[in-house]
Length: 122
Image (cartoon, rainbow, N blue to C red; front, side, top):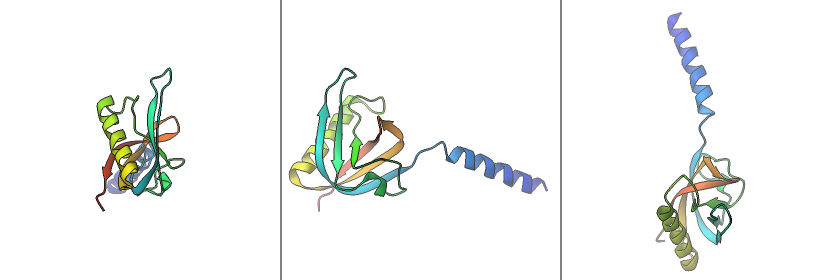
């Protein structure tokens, strides 16, 4: 009986805490557009992908093709965010594919934050 109660309690905790965390996913796509905006809150930098972000592995809850690179966020340093922006610009200019890792628990506005961009050589 103790084992059953322990199992049910563990299952309950797992179901409660699993809904707190967002989905992280990776998507291979091309960069279609890069945008940098300046505003009173410091502005931001974004990249538009050739595929919707919610098609990434684990199906993150991201509304469209845009990801935010976090140039004005608390998720990463400005230096790292601008390095990811440079990666996106290079991939756009050279028409290279990228692997973008996103986390829907970390959103900037309604866009998911991309915490990694890898340029694919092929």
